[in-house]
Amino acid sequence: MKEHIVRGFRFETYKAPELSVFDRLLEIFTDLLTHTSGDFDEAIDWLRMLDEEYQLTIPEYTIDDFIEDLKKKGYIREEVDPNGGNGIRLSAKMEQNIRKQALNQIFGNLGKSGNGNHKTNKSGTGEDTTGEFRNYSFGDPVEKISITESLKNAQINNGIGDFHLTEDDLIVEDSIYQSQMSTVLMIDISHSMILYGEDRITPAKKVAMALAELITTRYPKDTLDIIVFGNDAWPVKIQELPYLQVGPYHTNTVAGLQLAMDILRRKRNTNKQIFMITDGKPSCVRQSDGTYYMNSYGLDEYVVQKCYNMASQARRLHIPITTFMIAQDPYLQQFVSEFTEANQGKAFYTGLNGLGHMIFEDYETNRKKRIR
Image 1 (cartoon, one colour):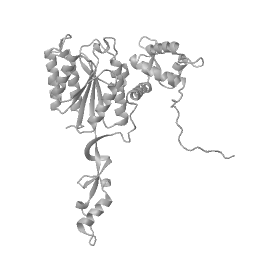
Image 2 (cartoon, helix red, strand yellow):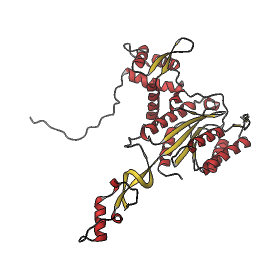
Image 3 (tube, one colour):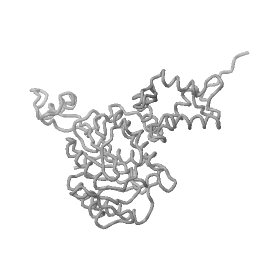
Image 4 (cartoon, helix red, strand yellow):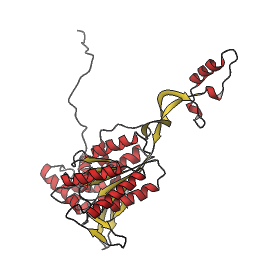
């Protein structure tokens, strides 16, 4: 009896690859570390509670085994604290793992990029071609010269009988200009970021970590500086992001913008931009004598006007500001609208869901045009 062979495709329900107990726990634990601002002990306590409720471990592999594996694999290390006791600290490997997980959670739908540069709609020096040709200009790379088109051009211009090739005959295959971007990401760490029963700082941290990991891995020629602002503003390193906490601060938006523009003034890139994640109204400015002028109750005209002045100054420096406004209050949105008009930038009035996708899409959009 002949065997009947069926050719074609067979479709089945997708089954995710089976993770080991360690990998499954590591994914959960990494997320907990973001929520606890890098507090290892608190994150482990939460993991134990989740294990009791959802049976994450098996008798052969417990939470204590997981902790030992974290040490062996270099995710954590034991250190002696100032009081003489032993403490657990996160390693650089774990800090990078937190950023990678944030990247996968927020920008997981992104495809891989070949060389990690942004494309614009301008032609110029780059590796990707436009499919079009133009006359050779001094300074064009030799490897960009199209031999076939140049020879054809020489024959048209000079004839076949007495063939010779001149500079005027040379044709270059045009390429897409690959621009570089300098971005400053401002994160509001005023007290309102954890008020009203809503954790707003954790999503902001995740977005910052995802954006940092995206730029350093996919767009290494770009620069990203991250600053936080409360009563004052100061820069934070990428390695510090998991440990960010909200303080008992007012919102000194002016100080954040001043620092952001100071940073961008020192960048050589033509393209510069500021992303600002905030949930509240500006309520504080620092005076020239070092004292603080504060008003927590409303949009104080003095504070607001300072913000508008900074927005206009950024516009004159060709630095667009994109504001991601988490709060939904109409009077706050009105302030952001006027602030955006003064800068001629953009504003997104959004909740916490989809914040990461919005920031990425805006980042990509800005990189497709050369800001002058």
